[in-house]
Image 1 (cartoon, helix red, strand yellow):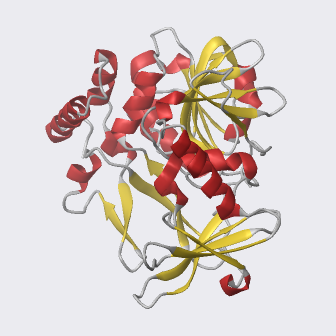
Image 2 (cartoon, rainbow, N blue to C red):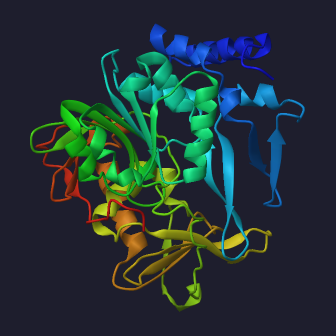
Length: 391
């Protein structure tokens, strides 16, 4: 299928209509880019996980492929096999509505030079290049094969932004300064390299997540001595930044829940059902907790939701409840679930404020300070130190 075929243009127009109806797409310039850049060129195939855990491929020859590509949905576009033979996701095409929401939040104008962290399929770089021109768009990714494929697709459309194979946490210093930096991967900490590569008054938009689901998109302005700004009002999530172009390691959780100290909780077993308290709890938790499941319940599902920390601490929360309470088992120097409970109680006492009331300040020494309403607020949380690279 060529890029001038009428059906994809009708699909692209409908996609733009859908995102406009959702109240996300406001700029005529971004609408024009969305209608001009064919998403299907960047997503010749995608993968859908089946109930049994296996992945099904949908490609250009598959019925309904074009319809699916132009729906306002994320699509898994690359898998990798771990040492234990498990297939895991390593790249995706972001939900177009989320991508437009981020581009709108960045308040980009035609003069801006933009660095994208996470090239992926190249679709977002295509939107940026369509809007700004090739010479103002730069994009990096750790995966050489993804960058090569993205470059080929972009060139097919006559678009030639600068693409580079590099660790996203290092930015692209040789082409700085930038007016805007946008990251389409989550990071446990905002790299200070990004602050050094964006001009004063410029903006950085990134998915700050200290641990699994523990954070959100934050829009930070560059000041002389800091990055500072607010979280976006709607939660979103991206795949975590990778240090190498390999599959992430398998998550092996070797523990026996019954060995832990016992308590109970009224909260759900997954803290991300209370996203803001889970983020606030990170101020008292080791960075980048690992998550997994243990055991088989009588219903056929998992018995325990388990978190493990780098200091040897762990907690296990029962997936099943009895009279509104769940069993909790904890062991180690950090009482992971207790810290989450404390953060949840504090958040309730504050009146359950939403994302739009929280902000972050990042300084050159790596300090990440979260605050409520204003940077000088009496209600603040300093996150534990974390590497700007993945664990």
